[in-house]
Image (cartoon, rainbow, N blue to C red; front, side, top):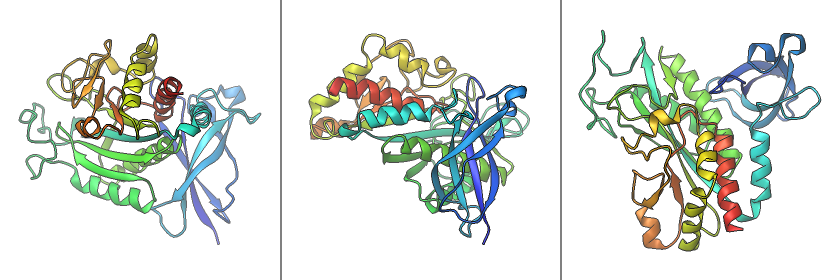
Length: 335
């Protein structure tokens, strides 16, 4: 019997990579082969040395095609079998393995915005702006919520694919939504987030709508879009002192700039100190403070253990880079 395997990979587009995919017909989904593609068309190779290699790293049921077909997330390799320079998963996996004994786990809150005909879904036809922010967040009703049919379908597809989807909600700006992946370790949390992003783009196609991860989709007095990243280790899940150690480490010398540089393009447009953000050039942490770089949930302080939320990553961040940076910084401090 023949099956359809949708090979998905992250390309070399700068400053923000895109997802690409193509279909391979296979006789079995149990032993998927490596495959090739034209890297000169994905910003990953010159035309005279265009071959790149796709290596399957994460497979799940294809909830769109069904019937035993699969989605296959791939790493990109050079023809000699080494990681391609655009392959950020390899370094993430290496760092996660180095600190595996600390059992780092993540939950990533992926915000995104629907656009149609050049405007955010829910913005008036012909230009102008809707009512100011306020009622849209976790709202209900046709005057405050836009795109729910797409969101519900996406949620169902993620669950059918077996992803660790833990929730969804409408966000602060019209047409803006969020889904959460986790808690799960790295690099798997990033694998699943990339697949969930692909499913989001794919299902939105069927509705004639585009989903964007632009961190500041509308200038002015509107919230940006982030990928708040929740993180803990075994020590943090048992001891509040470890929570504080991790928070201090994230603000250590050289670490603020390193993390900001790896948290997504145009981050300064979103991290302004307004709209529930801390300024991108400053670092702070606090309990229940959504204006801090890193938030300690109130329940964590009360329980004396738990996790932290790094609120700085952009919606367009590379989750392999984000999780690698957080593991390396926090786990090194906790070692």
